[in-house]
Each structure stands twice: as C-alpha cells, then as structure tokens.
Amino acid sequence: MRRVALLPVIGLLTILPGCYSSNLLEYEGLKPANIAISGSVKSLVVVSKCDLDSAYKFTAILAGRLSDFKRDSIMMKQTVLGCSDALLESPRFSLFNPVVTRNLAGQYTNPSEKIPWTKVLEIAGDPPHDAVLSMEYGTIDDTIRSNPASGWLNPCQFVVSVKTHWRLYRLSDFQTVEFNFADTVAYDIDSPSEFLSSLNMGPDFIKSAMYDAGVATAKRLAPWWSTFRRYYFSIGPQGFETAASFLTDGNWKQAAEILRPFTLSRAKFIARNASFNMALTCEMAGNFPAAYDWLTKAEKLGVHELYITEYRAQLSARKIELDKLDNQMK
Image (cartoon, rainbow, N blue to C red; front, side):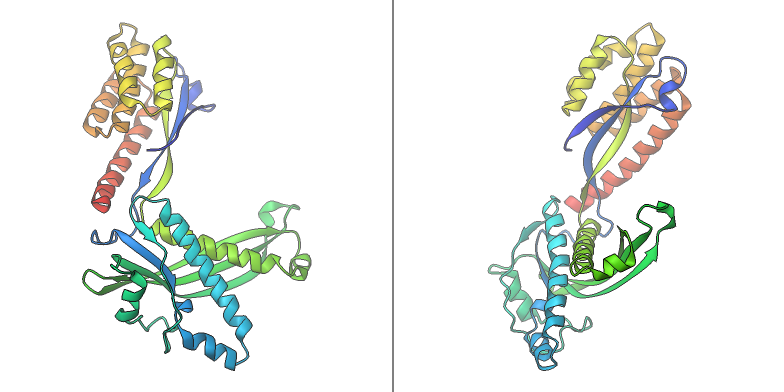
C-alpha cells in the first residue's frame, strides 16, 4: 500500500441522524491485471517490431516514403515508451532496456509474421530475460467531431483511436501470446480551422494518444496502483483522532489497538463507530474474516444500512481482487 489521506466528506452519508460524521479515507493499493501473464515471466524487455526490420526502412526509402517511416517509427516508439514507463510503476515485472539492431530482413511489419526466435534471443539479452513484449503493429484513426456537452466552450474534439497488436515471446517454453487492444482519446479544441492550421497540434495529440495506449496496455498486463476510498467515523472520544492519525500513516495495528477498547463502550454510538472503524483496520491488515466480523457487530449496534451495504460490497470486491493479485504476484 502507498500514500493514505483522510478527507472530510460532505454529502448524504455525513448528514444522516445519530452522530454520523465521517471522513473519507483514501489509500493506494494494487489492483490485479486484467490479463494474467504466466508466472514464469518475471523480467521483460519491450520493443517495437517496426524498429527491428531493416527491409521496412529500405522499402520506404525506395518508395519515397521515408517521412512516413519516420512518422510510424516515432508513433510506435511512443506506444512502447508509454508501456515501459507504466510497467516500471508495477511490482510485477523487472524491466530491462533491450539492445536493438535493425537487422531483420523480411515482411515482419506484417503482424501475422512472428519475430524469429534467434532475434528474440538477441533482444532478450545474455543471459536472456524471461520474455520479450513486442509492439507488432498499430493503426491510428483520427477525426474531428462536435462536442455539444461542453456548450460554447471547446465546442469540438479531436478524437484519436489507436489499435495495437502486441505479442509476448516467452522464452521458458518458446511460446507466444497475442493481444489486440483498442483505445480512444478525445482532446478538446477551439475550432477545426485553427486546429488544422497548426503544424504541431495534431501530431502532438497523436503522439500523446499513442503513449496513452501504451500505458493502457501495461495496466491490462500488470497489477496497477489504484486509489481506494473508504468511510471512517470521526465522531468519538479523543482517541478517535489519534487512531485517524495512525490510519493516515498506514499504521493499521496501532489504530486498532486504540479503537478496540472503544468497541466495549457503554455509549452505543461510540461502540458502533469504533466497531466499524475496526473493520477498516482489519481490511488494511489483510484480515478479511475479522473485517466481516467487526462489520457485522457494527451493523448490530446500529450503524446505518447505507454504510454497511456499501462497505460489505467493497470488502467482497477487494477480497476477490487480492486473491487474483496473490496468484499473479507468485
């Protein structure tokens, strides 16, 4: 878990009767990847196949399309850069920069053509890392459309749709896995005429969209840090404030030590608030059976149904995520 913050909540839940003043606790935790990569893959190198094929550049030069080649190369590199930067943020893989030489000869820009394993081994280093993730092919579709939702401000949008084809070359068993993704980004613009007259705005937006597509790819393939939000009751004796300070610092055990005696209070609202907060400390500690038990006690003591229902659903969803995460991080 990473940074934590307690934020005041203003809304329906905070104005419910019966001493229901609450704060919003925000903390960062890992969410599991949408696509599970084999546990044999612990280290990765990420490349663009566009930059491996010598024939691709040579053919472009002969056809007088060197500028097109440079544009494609830059765009593909943006996708690889976005993917690499995002993968570095995840604890799932160790990432290494490949030494790439443009010595492939053939129609390897065709996504159906796999990179030869001899080349994959060259990219993977010596000794080789576990896998090579290659951006095999990508297409860009852009258009300008009206943006009526914005009213008179930014009435138009420049929309970039990026489709990418990736292939994971796994060296443990010399098998490949393919992924196809589609990502769309919309940028607000003032007017089509001003946008089209700009020399850099369109290409810059496309580069940004390609980078974002790479980031989105990484988030699909690796666990990713996300923000979770939980309610915490702030009404109670002075110890509640001290427990909140421990929560903001991520010290769940110390917060629980302070809160536990309050769960036995003769003042019902103190006992119920402390019990609900104890469920939160148990979740943070990864003890979900105890979290459910404390939540049930808080419910019996009269914590409002809105809090109970929402938090029980959050606990169930988080438990499923952590089970998946455990399998992916083994």
